[in-house]
Length: 135
Image 1 (cartoon, one colour):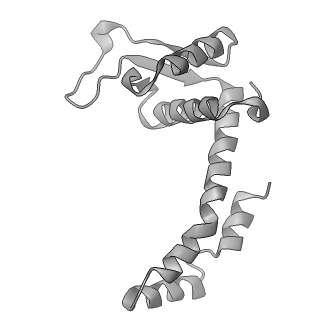
Image 2 (cartoon, helix red, strand yellow):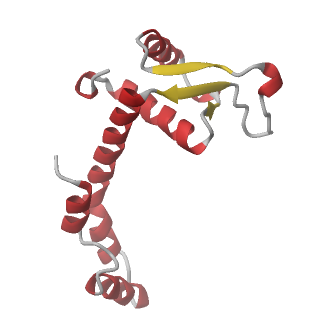
């Protein structure tokens, strides 16, 4: 798996898998996947990048809003790439965050925002970029 050759769809699927692995104990609801996602997942399994499959029926926990019927485990290389993609996504979000907070707050919130920046409790845009690293 090479981060630079992944398509937009593959990157999105990898981040979806990483989120399910981290936040949902490796379980996922395949109703959130389309046919192409399944093909990509099957290819990654064949290439040894991930483990992906159906959870045995007796182990499936079903709720009214979610039916996690499958599991996913990213192996180290895929997990590292997902981490890089997550970091890049965070960097893309930074330019508007502090500006939005500064310009869209009024009254007590504006002074709160300024106080947080002045006291070093809220990083500036440049400080966020420095914390996350540059690309």
